Length: 448
Image 1 (cartoon, rainbow, N blue to C red):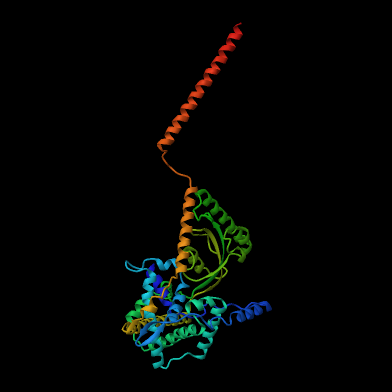
Image 2: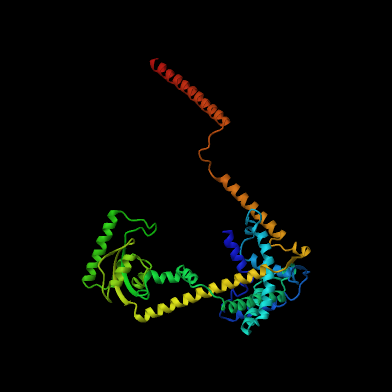
């Protein structure tokens, strides 16, 4: 689990897109949306232009210095992913996840230097479309207060610093796309990845000769399971369901309209509004239902079909079986899948080669600045402690409220219980004696 978290975190170190800023909003109707949007822009227009943050160098990579604000931007990106508590978990026997990620930051910052240098050498720059998208996303981050002036002053995440950071993500993609195109990958590696691809596996499991099969049917269902629990009904109720579907079948043979009988009898609540209609391809429905549906011709009605859900009567509305042209189209889909896999392998191979170069970089830590690189602030740690204390308190209170089960009475409880029993017995005996005396007196009075 921790390894997967780490991979996800590292993957977004250079991420900067609409999704990184929360996604683009859809335009709403009316003037209010426009007014609010303009007001929002004006309110946040000056955020990030200036900062009181005192920047300082933390690393030197091949002679080039990197500042604390650059690490803070990456950390800001990382902290959006998971609750703060995650970073206190153990990564291994020696380090927490926070400590391990701070070590990885050194390589990430070194990679930034190498990306800029290599992209410059390869003549890779941002396109006009890239620049436009970058500015839109940058403005959105500040407008939506994903970056506040407090963040700017605390971490040095100014608009200019964030823009420079974002440019690296575009340069990285352009560089890797260009260089990966020249990388060679073994056909065996492509074939292995292809066999594990879900889209390809689906095609091959159905078969190219049936992959484009499509059928539209209407059906009437009488359930043999409880719709709430999905448990099989009793044999008696299953027999009643069978009798009911046979009655419906007789009505169909007598000429009653299928759609009318769907509304009157079908227990498939999802499809009743569409007169029991479904459109599907291969391997999408229960096998018995699917097999019966594809055997039918247009307007033909099936015999009673039994599935795990119940008894069905199925009417074919439309049917399309895979044609030679469809098979050709499927072959083209497979080629697209292969190309996607090949490109992915090339990209990953070049990325691995590039990172090996980065690992050989001359990285010098500037201790005075580096000791300020932290994922969790003191405030974060205080909040974590507070949440943990509140959780523990709630758990303790809930345990108090729970009734004690099979708890053995203490010696004191036993003594108190014995004492109560003896007192009750003594009281009962005393009352019995008093009753006996009353009865004796009544008997004497009668004799007199």
